[in-house]
Length: 421
Image (cartoon, rainbow, N blue to C red; front, side, top):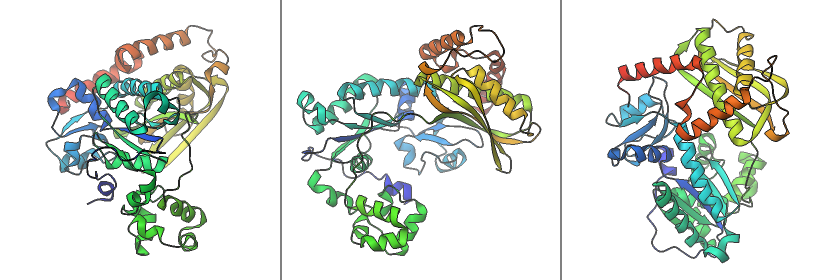
């Protein structure tokens, strides 16, 4: 069994919830989120192995149904390997717009329960429900309420871990997947943690796990019995102390409702290496459109635009420029990214990946009204906001710059030839 399978191996489905006294922290995790959202439109695929991700030769699995996971398929796996492991799987392309809309609706459910919601990604979050107890009942009852509302309102399932710390709550949700609810009593944390593999501890990557195995430490309980000074000598003061605390269930971190984005970006790995500048420019435009939309959606604007260029030999360079004023306009982002690319000296070099990122973010309300470089105020802001409204209603691909229409048409033709679904 692989390391990833060990960490995500479900425990026995729980019976009646255990004592949740003092367990105000919930970790809610959607079950195979991307796949679940796709199945809302493709119900005939329920019960079959389904994989969501890039179908090209360099495609990567974004999500896999539990039926596909039985064959060893998991997220971040190369799609070529996933197809070898499960040739009968149905492969669906990624549809970010759909996932964002469902995620927003799910987070509205969370925030109707408590304002203390810390989102980790589109499909998981921590909640502190201590303040909701008088109104909604005990934490386990609140967890069940969330599961019911997510299922009834969105048609998908989630798993919820209930504990007295974030670390244990997250482990609990993992152990009761899919579609489960697990309470770890405050006085039962050690009994829950100590049988688990050391890889379950946050901060234990493959290299640290190898070091711990070399010391004969394979379970959290074995690590917990090692003196702190020994762990710090073997792993360093910071990591040794961190793992010692976690092994005894001590995690003082609070649920933080919002952590401001430090940057917003997007990148694309080509199916085959590209040395055509026009193709690169179109990709930069597409990525700039995506980044601009995410900036406006988050209410942020940024002053620094950067491009990431990875060559066929995996050598990667980045180039950045700080603007005179913050922007959330895709046009400004694109023109800057294009100029950075053109000045990189890589216009005729084969590229494997390109990326666009905006940094030095701040609330867009503090940004002055941006003009598109030397152009008059010709309505770019209004046009992009109109595009946002159309995308929100009909999906991100419903409206796009003319330069991207030909690329999309070519992609559709390729998809038809490849037999993609």
